[in-house]
Image (tube, rainbow, N blue to C red; front, side):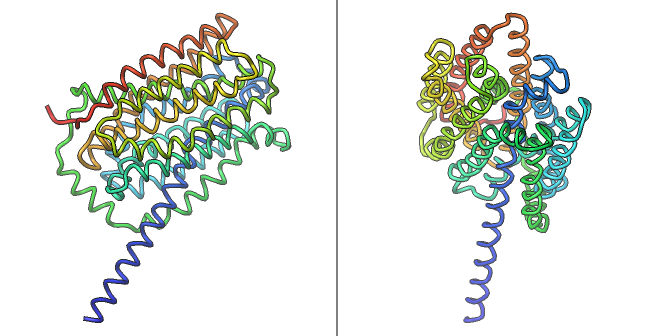
Length: 405
């Protein structure tokens, strides 16, 4: 009896340690999902000037990762089912580290090749993390979604804030400012190593293979979630890419523009933590969709017509709206499905279609600026996307689950 009790204690202790290591791994993966991208915006002027890129070509630095998200997202869950989720995430982190190094070397070609690798790596992590959380933290989905969203947005905010100061202080300039994020991805790679030993992922993958796949392409709800995911991504990545240039044209310095963008992302953090927890306790999420839409709309109107002295408040308002919408999109993957496989399938569809739509944002925004020589028409485009986001969110926020037709 005593022996069995001791064995049970050891088993519980081992399980607890495993959960802790998994939690740390998820936090560090989350910390790498935005910083390598948000660090580009404040440096875009320097990159364009040194490499002689147009505004449209500069916008492609944000568009390329989004196209990678769209291309690879539908296949991420299939790869994970075959080789295991732990292994798939490990090699994604390896590709991310390699991409950051290549992007930070020299020349236009390597800049875009490295950016492509970064996009492919982040695409896999984006798709699999919601599924991983539903699989290993089924009773704490809201809390865990909030935890990894916080790590993502915190490091994303830091990336926006310190990129330009690092480029000025470093003899490597923008290359050093972008390359330093390879340190964080390498740490995440090392911390994920224990997950390669977990055979549980392989067993769970085999079990889920027997689960029938959802008819997502025939589901109105799946399309609403996909468009909601895509539209909030359009807004986020366009603002991240171009807001520093807008602010500098309004009179702010490069450092002030970068830190304003950083403050926006820091303001998002409490909401990206709380929104998933609140959403998980509500029968439907339409009220949260409405609040996020109103904040976003107010923020963009303020950027268009508000006084410069209040510009930070307007940017923070838009940021909170986008951050809340992102958290809701992540929760929809789990709230609107019945198991981890379905969550991964929905995540793959939503992020594929969503980021394909999002890829148009920075490119179209830059193109409109080149054509109109101003920011008014591009910002009106963001208002239109905000309205569509609200409409799709009202459909996605209903209390129901995707079912096979």
